[in-house]
Image 1 (tube, rainbow, N blue to C red):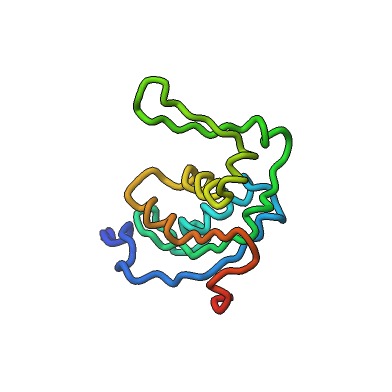
Image 2 (cartoon, helix red, strand yellow):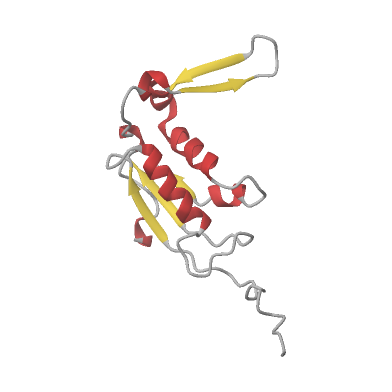
Length: 141
């Protein structure tokens, strides 16, 4: 009985076909939206998905200033950053972070849902977040 040894190999690495997807931050809560965005950036929605190949799509998010969240997350969800010095732990809640820069909230949520490897930085570059309806990639849709 002969065994095909090339059975478990992936196809030759070719330039992936990347689609464009548009999300409106007013329509659904940002956690659910962020998980859908992470799937699209990773390319798990495609038939030829392979975890070691960066074959995801481009994602554009609009209206990040009107980000929808549920429950008490405005006051209860806290973002921390640490300077490295004693007493250097800074915290900011979700409502204040949205006022400061709403685009960063979506990027942080999606970044945490992507795999922790070398491809993550390349995947997050394909996420474009805008504060309002005006975005540069209108010809892609």
